[in-house]
Amino acid sequence: MSTHVSGDESRPFVVRGGGKWAVRHGTRRHDRGAGERRFDLTLSENPFPPLPSVIEALNCALAHANRYPEFLPERLPRMIADRVGVDADQVVVGAGATGVALQIMQTVAGPGRAMVFAAPTFDGYPLMAAMAGLESIAVPLDSSGRQDLWGMARAIGERTALVAVCRPHNPTGTVAAASELKAFLFGVPRHIPVILDEAYAEFLSVEELLDPLELIARYPNLLVLRTFSKAYGLAGLRIGYAFGHRDLIRRVRRLQVPFGMPETATAAVAASYAATSELSERVLRITIERELLRTSLRRNGIRIPRSRGNFLYLPGPGMVETLARAGIAAKGYPDGSARIAVGDAAAGRAVERALCGPTLVRSDRARIEESGAWSLTAPAAYPSVPPDDCSVDHP
Ligand code: PMP
Image (tube, rainbow, N blue to C red; front, top):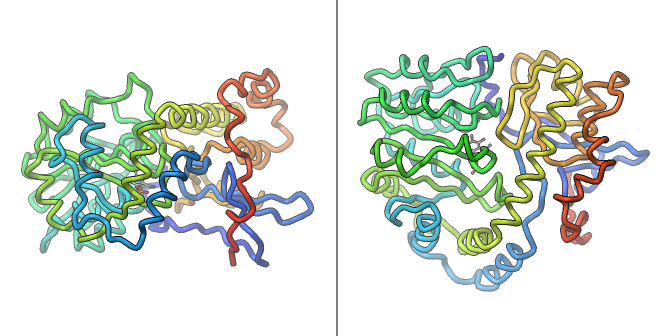
């Protein structure tokens, strides 16, 4: 397990020679002719395009794009608060979970102050800590890819201004046990804010879900961070939020950028909340694909931690290079390990072929696809290829 963060969340995957990235149901792909296909799995994106109802709501909002949005967002936090079950003044919204996290960091930053998180973790934490002037205290994961909560507790000191715990964790997808997390929170001094990063919470099973309301009632220093980028598939719209005790939220809201939250965000969230069952079905499909891929790779000797995100962590060395040779771009770590987004069956098959080669006799996926069970979760209503005018030229 790597103990370093690469510090590079950018796509290392450059397509040469020009061409079109087809935006379609599935992963970002590039067809290079002669049957050669490339997959970009570097970012933990949702492979499904927005639902038709969400696109319709966005089009309506765009028709009023000559108007400014609210000076400071009110409708969106209220909508989210109603859904979560808190008061509107307990929610702060921003440009993705990234934007909200930066706002939190800027709120607590000051000379000589530090932030504690695991390593590796979401690249945004070390990057934004540096932007906010916070020193990064990075605590290595344990040997099974879990955040070392006891090590993180020991790393908290006089200068600690902020702590971040991810559940599920990025990049390994592991989930801290509820009892361990609660014991950890109990031990953090109440004047130090803790971000509980739940970017992938919608992929947790019912038994793994925490009661966030109970937690924020008990820990006034806790901020639960969530996003519409992952399960909701709206990464391009940049919508995230945090909720917690109103005093702490008030402090974070002071840094809200005026006119900073577009009406499209409110429209997309409203339409998404109205389409919960369709979105849950997509989450289920991504989850099934993740489990099929993990099972088949593990059968071929690759020790992949159990993931509860829309990605898998493939321990190195040489993983990134092997995938790259097969035209698959992955997020890389210094020891050669890779993280790949999951959910697109064609990309999953390409990963199996790249990593298992001729030893892959017959994957579980093939068996399930042949049995027809897959179609039970795959409604025909999803267009597999949107109209051509959705294609974008890529240098
Ligand atoms: N937290 C974690 C753990 C993540 O993995 C990510 C995205 N990779 C984010 C936060 C940021 O998500 P966004 O800014 O797209 O909402």
